[in-house]
Length: 172
Image (cartoon, rainbow, N blue to C red; front, side, top):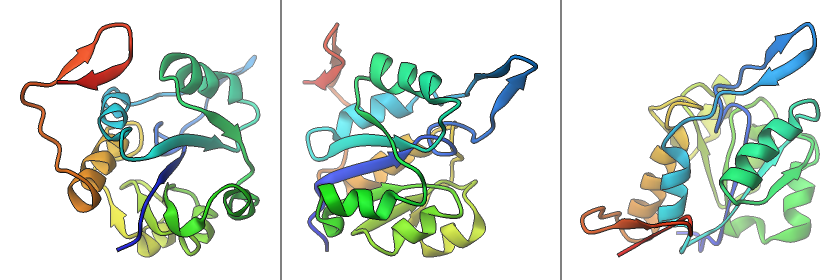
């Protein structure tokens, strides 16, 4: 079993449904799932959590959700540069990576553990250690968090847990 310390998640197609919503004025919104943030808070004590996106046109939308609302770091990293970006910052064998796209398969071959949502590119799913039943934007991240807790850490027990108001943290 790898010693996992970092959870890096691609935003589009993992936190979102992977679709880009455009009007004549340009990209206007992304659909994010409702339970993913809560589940990340539950495993945050075990893993350093951060997000990556290669979507320049939708970066401000992702930044609003990830950094402003969820309080997690977001990095602009091209899908073609992710392996090198991870190598420069982390021991790849200590990384859990969750992605859905064609080029995420390249990252999967380099990290300690990899997860794909149900709606990931079929070749990417073939290389994943775990594929969620839920799709991106519909609870895939929450399911992945639950899986990681049960497989590598302490199974989650929600009895007696409460959200510490204003702190964005789960506690007893």
